[in-house]
Length: 374
Image 1 (cartoon, rainbow, N blue to C red):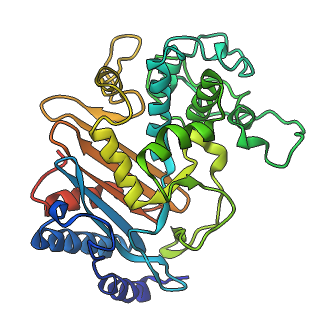
Image 2: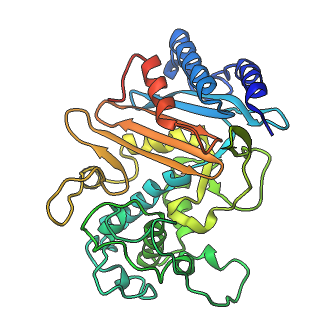
């Protein structure tokens, strides 16, 4: 356990000790690397922000001209054992798994196997009738009215299962919340919901007639060569970061939690190399067509015509500078992906502290690069 006064000294030592990883080790071609001065500026900016926030471990990826140009770890993956955070350290994606589910859904739309505006019960009749139509579009845009953890009355389905890991199937994972009343009529407003994305995962699985986990592997991980990409299970591995939380001014390890039951809401993890590769693939339109991309990154209106900040699975700021982003936060981690598809640049950030102000880290990296997120 760390205490505030000692913590400052510990972080100073850790951040200095985390020397830049060589480009050769990171397999980033020299012709596609940041100039040394710019890399040093990024390092200095991240270390300063880590000091301000008292963060334990961070990893950063930079994309320019559609190419990954920098990957770097800072601080510690495991403070107790003084294991440094590197580009190979595996962090939880948390809610950055949601864009993954969105892309899978839109691939099925392209194939004519999923209707965005069909009732979700067409695909998953096991989901209780709420007396209103909930569509896949509602799920994707956080307009479904389904609660998010503790912002409503949570009513699970209680029953016995025939195996020890029933929630490995997203259809059965619905039991954790499926009897809960809706917060509002679908389409009425935006209200962020991870449970909605578990339902979306079940819809995707049924529409594809393939287990959700297999779809993720076959349609995203394998085509993009994501070697570290995996589910967040109880089987802790050496390359996984330890998570940290702050309580009463103290920073200490978080309780280990398996998040694989969340599926497309928050079940996945990887190192920053693969997280950056995912962002690069989105930017370079490697997973969906141009027409589909346009649909995904179009801010979706509410039923009364009011604008919203959500596209299909992403936070979208349209205009002269199309900005696409998503954050993730859960016990053990905070993550951010921000890309500017038209300008072909982006930044990804991963941290093993659930209290990190992740937007300040990505903004610091952009400022160090002489750019702005705004």
